[in-house]
Image 1 (cartoon, helix red, strand yellow):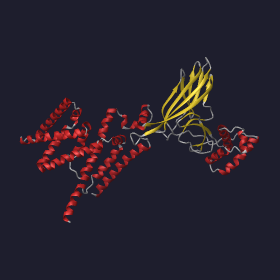
Image 2 (spheres, one colour):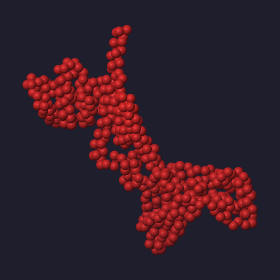
Image 3 (cartoon, one colour):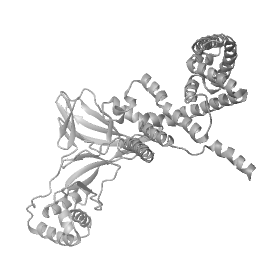
Image 4 (cartoon, helix red, strand yellow):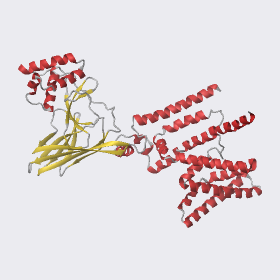
Length: 511
C-alpha cells in the first residue's frame, strides 16, 4: 500500500512539474501573455528624406535602416516613394536600402516607416564577433605627446578594458584640459569628441566602433545619437561618448554601425533626413497573430491558435471539461455532496452553454418532471429496462421538439437551443431520479436532483469563465497540473466536510 501511494505521489509530482514547466516556458521564453487583454508597447518610426534631384539624371539614394538583431521585433516595414525602385541589401552587420530612379524631377521626398515592439524578441541570436586589437596610429609631434599624457593616468585608474574605455571617454570630455583641447583642435562637438576617444583607445590598441541610435520617445524632428562599442572577447560593450556610461538603454534602437554616412546621394544634392517616433499599446495576442500572419516566429505556430477558428471554438469547449470534472471530484470527494451519476453535472453544464443558465434550469426541471410522470406510468406496464429507456428517450426527443416548435411560434429563440441538451443524459437522469425515489424516497431523490443541478450551475460558471478558458486554451499544461491534483485526490481517505458537520452534531449530543 505504501509503495502504491508513493508511486501515485511521484506520478502527481511529475505531471505537475511537466505542466507547470511548460507554462513557465511559454510565459518566460515565448513571451505568451498571461492575460488575454495584456498589451505590449509598439513604436512607429517615420524617417522623411528630402532631396533635390538633378533634372533628367539617374538618381540613386542609399540609406542605412535598422538591422533589428535581437532587441526588437519588426511588425511592419514600408518604403514609400514616387516612381522609385527599392532594394534592400545586407551590408555586414548593417542593412541598407537603395532608392533609384532613371530621371530626376527636382525636389523629391522619400519615406521610410518601421513598426517595432520589444516583445517576442529573440535575444538568443548570436552577434558577430569584433576585433580585440588595433594597431596604434602613427601620431607625431604634439599630438603624440598629448595622447601619452592623457593615457598615463587612464592606465593607472582602470582595471580592465571596460573601465579603460570609460575613463578615456571621461577624460576626453574634460575640455578644459590643455591636452584634450589640442586633440580636439577647437571642435568640441559630440562627433569630434568620439573621434578623439577612438584615437586615444587606438593608441592603447583597443578598437571601438561608432554606433548610431534613435531614442524611442514620442518626438518629432529627432536626431540620431552617437554611441561607441567595443568587443571584449565575449560580448559587445556600449558606451555613452558624453559621460562614459556603460550599457545601451532599452529605449535605444540601433540604426547602423560604423563611420559611413547615413545618406549617400548620386544624381542630386541637399539630402536631409528627419525622424519622428510615435508610441502606442497593442494587445499582445494581436501582435502574436500579426507575426504569425507575416510568417515570423510566434508561439502561435506551436499552439492551438494555429488551427482553424471553428476547431478552436470546439477545442475551447472540450478543454474545459477536465476543469468541470475536477470541480465535481472535489465536490463529491472532499465536500461530500452526492449527485446523479459521476460526471452528469459536467454534461448538463455543457448544455447550459447553449441555453443559458436560467432557461437551462427551467428546461431541466420541466423535462425531468414530465419524464418522471411518463416513467411512473411505464413502470406499471412492467417493461424491461432497455425497452423502458428506449421509450423514455423517444419521449424526451418528442418533448424537446415540441418545446422548440412552441418557442419558435412564441418568438422565443432561446428555446430552439434545447435540442443541444444531451438527450441520453436527460433520459438517464430521469431513470436515476425515479430509481432513487423508489429505493430511498421522494425526499432523497429530490435532494439528489437539486444537488446535481446546483453542481451543474457551479460547473457552468467555472467552465464559462473567459479568463479560465483563455488560460487553459493558451497554456494546455494546466491540464497536466489538474491531472496531478486528480491523482492526489484519488488517495484521499479522510472525512468529507459534510460528514464532519454530521459527526459534530453526534459529538455534541453524546457530550
